Length: 114
Length: 115
Image 1 (cartoon, chains in turn purple, yellow):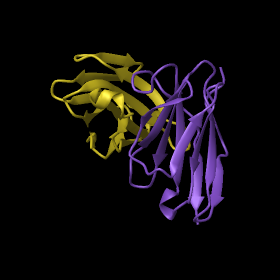
Image 2 (spheres, one colour; image 1 turned 180 degrees about the vertical axis):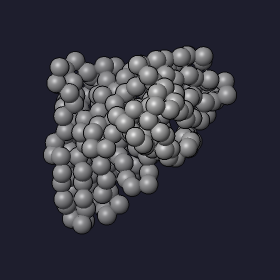
Image 3 (spheres, helix red, strand yellow; image 1 turned 90 degrees about the horizontal axis):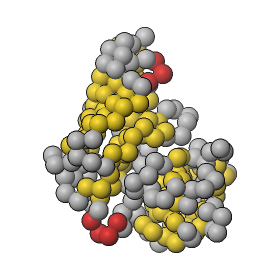
């Protein structure tokens, strides 16, 4: 079974721009969660999608948004990028719930904001 | 704001020795506790998902215990090997707020196995 894939793997943007990251879950998994990791911080939960609906949301500003498609693929968007948005963004898929099921992580997208 | 603490932050262990570290989490509104291993340049890898007080899980030389009443979990590694070098993360899921929060991760224990 193919693992979780994320594209692109690396991205460089400038302040004020917007960015879209993509995540393809493991086949059959319906839940996709997104996380941000910055230096000195642990993994921080952004949001979780299940069956095209946002089920949970972390404590991030509205500039961070996401969506999920009918094939369970998910995208996250960050608008008006700030320097502090430079981070590793990970997505994880699980069969039903990211809270109680084993999550399988993708390789991440490294975003650098200049 | 949920507080998930892991200790120690880092640990150097001789190859062949056994070791353990701790994850502390809120004892109220417990739903699940996850353990992950994260090796450099790789994706986090799931080790265990624990949901019941007193749960004990084992995977090879790695095992974990859970005490939801006092809010802690231990991860044990028996006979450490160099390939065990990684950051070990725990993540808490609570049932408060109608499940509005996802997983809250600790900052991890960075384990280095010295040959």
